[in-house]
Image (cartoon, rainbow, N blue to C red; front, side):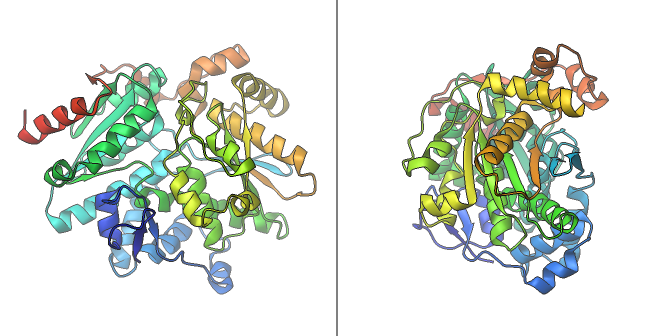
Length: 440
């Protein structure tokens, strides 16, 4: 498989090169030169197959020729050693729970697969790889746990001070070992900007062998397509061939982009709802074709507080820059904090199901989509991106009740936070990375 940059100003890359570079040298995001398509015969063999079989079949399309089948099967097996439940709320509405991995967030799917792939390629190159990551919450902890103790790797996480939940911050800052957390005086867009500036610093990038585990890394994007393929195959069969609509809580748009990838590979997906919070730059783009990012706005769904989502470049690439074509597959709906809290309450009252704020945004987006498109009567799937216990303050505000915190999260809360504070100027990050390289 060959990958190109969305900026089209750099040479094509193998999967290894795209994985270890993260961001292309011209500042673009790697995309497959050709999206592999599953034939009807191939899909027939996968109907009713376990999640890991579908994951392996997709991974093989992208990794064939670079990773032996047995090693790739081992990477898949070890990456997804947890379940992916599809929970029915009523006879045509489902929640796909993506929070059963070690950090209780959907980012575990991409981060664990990427960590093992990076470790495999780094060992081949006999290099120490520095993984530089900006996070608005769950990405950082998933990457930290995914890469913990992976040979030939070290992780530097940048997160916005005071703009992630306490549980998220504890997960980010208590891993230790080969993981360092940088607490940035700014918002997520500042963190993302700093990471991109580091990648554009050619001398530093080469000296540290920098790569990224954000969704800008194509090898974190690919495994996120697995759970769309899995759910679409399950629900198409259950609903007599009707293809599901996926409602995706959207911030940096990596999750939605992975869904588009799954659809373009031929899996039975009707369309998508891009459910955003007040940070609605893509929602507005879908209306009139003008992309006008705005400063990040803080909301209850903190991991989606992204004013200028990096994966928008991939979305535009997949639709050749045609917003009308994108709009035929994706419907954008923005959800306010007040609507988020009301959705948590109404879903609990109707179904006895507790949603975190991000999942609630996804559910509200699906409801809005159905109200506007009553002719689409297939099953709807809300992607549940985080365990509600990670947002206990919002759950208490919505429901007036405490919820049980899983033991693995309680254990994290009891640990001592260890972070390094830096400013939002690139020189601050550059100084830290230079000292890191010199062993200080």
